[in-house]
Length: 317
Ligand code: UT7
Image (cartoon, rainbow, N blue to C red; front, side):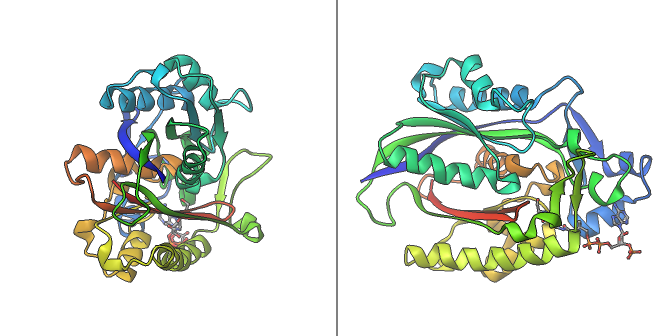
């Protein structure tokens, strides 16, 4: 049977770093409050003229280099983003043109912070159905463009950046020992739209932090169980948890539920803040650069975002 495996990864983080101490000069906040409540110490912020497409292209270019491939070796592009440069053409189209990707599908996917895992599941479906052999999947965000820099409840939380993976078809035998995506789960519940959204008028992000926090902890615990049950595996089978990086307390609660020591959890929230759809591929890239992951390791990805949307994927690297 066809499986979808992760061939390589790449990343891009803007040059400018905004520390908590920088934010202390902008709004009524403290480094200690931000660290204690979120774990975030700093975040990267894109230059004014730097677009989501620029970041997506840079991350994708590195992923291609790391796989020793050219754009022409790739069938299509999926970009998970909530902050595209413009309504259309999509960020994915900009990536396709810049890197000379073939004439397969190229589209953006909007599922907020859950976008990368939504994209992974979608790419897996395209590859397993034979519609593509190799795809670029990118999470790219410029959240600094939708932040009210006077609102301390939100401006301390988010960052900009992009992460990319090259996905390719491989042969599996249909067991959990196969390399690639073993199981993925996508969910949404639109009755929570007002908990986390971009205001249509101001174009600024709004969030009911405590309610999002509660839902995140509950839904992540449930989806982890669903993901493992689907393939008849147990918590102890997972080698790495690569969660969406919104808040260290949510990440720790999920790890505890999985009875997983934090040594097996990839954490980048302290350095990147919450980069929405870019957070998981950035964390994956970081773990690979640090030689934390080995081929054959079982990785659990999970995320929650505005909508709410929430999602998970179990992948043998
Ligand atoms: O990526 C999508 C998913 N997003 C998430 O998962 C985020 C989930 N939510 C959270 O991570 C947390 O709810 C936050 C980090 C956003 C907030 O932490 P909290 O512990 O839930 O704080 P809170 O909103 O209940 O606020 C506690 C206090 C309030 O003051 P009072 O009303 O108790 O006097 C806030 O006004 O902290 C105050 N506060 C701040 N103080 C200093 C809120 N933001 C700040 C700030 N600096 N930046």
